[in-house]
Structure formats: structure tokens, C-alpha cells
Amino acid sequence: MSAVSSRPSAPRRPGTRTGLSWWAVALAVVSFGALLAVMTAASTARAVSAPQSLAPVLEFLARLVGIAG
Image (cartoon, rainbow, N blue to C red; front, top):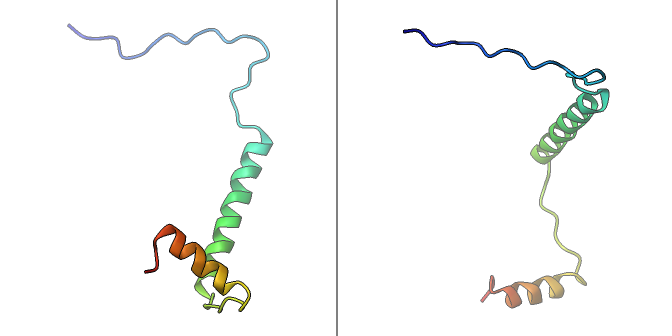
């Protein structure tokens, strides 16, 4: 006994679209480009010391969270 391997297609309503919109493709392209730019910039990044006015605030937050002893 063999099973049916295909389903009958449902009738389409008039006005329904099955393709991607232009903005969906554009969003994927922009997202890929932004990710590529971030990855490229990260490979050339260097460590930068925090400004002296910001260092005490970061130390306080680290002690508050429990990161630094």
C-alpha cells in the first residue's frame, strides 16, 4: 500500500503575494553590511584607557556588582 506524497494546493485568494517585499531584501543587505563593517573594525581596534573622570565611576560599579574585590 503506497501513501500519497503530495498535498493538494490550497486555492489562493486574490491579492495575496508569495514573494518577498523590497524592504525585506534591503533590510537583509543592510544588516549584513553593518555586521561586516563591525567585524572588520573590530580586527583593527585597540584598547583605549578610560578618561580619569570615568575610572572611579567604573570602579564603583564593578564593586557594586561584585566583579572587583
